[in-house]
Image (cartoon, rainbow, N blue to C red; front, side):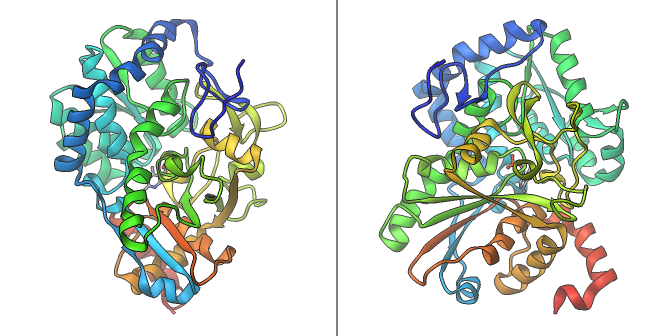
Length: 405
Ligand SMILES: *Cc1c(COP(=O)(O)O)cnc(C)c1O
């Protein structure tokens, strides 16, 4: 196995250091192999690139602004810029990837799209692009999550998707993933599986990272315009599976002067038993088709994670990030539910922007870092907080004075 020369570029077999690869059932080999052999060639076609860029511009609303957060900067004594992925169509970065993958599916001649979703954000982004292109869309979702995320289920249905409940196990994301894989095995020729993060068997982590890399591509020229240099001091992003982070880091990974900061969800505290801080708690293992760090028991059973934010509530991490952690290239921090919540309220009042709870973890990590006045810090604001209003309302009702004080 060749050693990957670059932090952003996996080997031909999909390895970032010792993480990645494609650990899949025999029945999926043909599908995954077709994708492995064709994705780079298809993404390299001028017509593909043109259609992708046009949709990102006219449909998603790119480039998203790079916003100088003046009041937040004053509080932290440095220069802080927010990359506004919250302003993307559907309210988060996920649509960058689903737009790319729907174009990939069409080039591969697929007629039917399947996806899995936890909180429903990836399901909504997938249902959106299926409506755009008139493709059949089936979204697998844990029965428990369907109850908890009613507004997103309604959105998917309104967009024409069929939402199928996963009724086995804990009736959450990992069970929905199992159902989606089962579907793919049963429909090998006409179906494309749109995975929503930089996880899964090779080539998904690399393909999704490339689709999301538009984020850091824009940050480079936007910083050049605003501060006269393309390279920030640090880039900070929250990590669930790691797709918004991969996109925000991508064009800085091989620039050693840029500090890469990944923020995981500590839940009630890293050692509380209710956490999703994978790099702190996980061990090497195989989850959803790739070798990575996984939260697991001593006998290898996947541990049910916990985070207040559904998007970070995942027991693994993409192989690129596992390698960034393992090699020391990335700085990995974690933020508790409570600190993320406090930070969301503070940020809303400082900047007039209500962040997604996931993104709020990245903002909260500022207080664990030290920067100089002249430093340039970029925080990826992965999504907007509308979807989290229920949680925010509960926080205001239960502990209004503390969280707003
Ligand atoms: C899904 C989601 C995340 C987490 O997913 P990544 O693949 O780690 O980016 C983060 N922020 C928002 C707003 C999300 O919807």
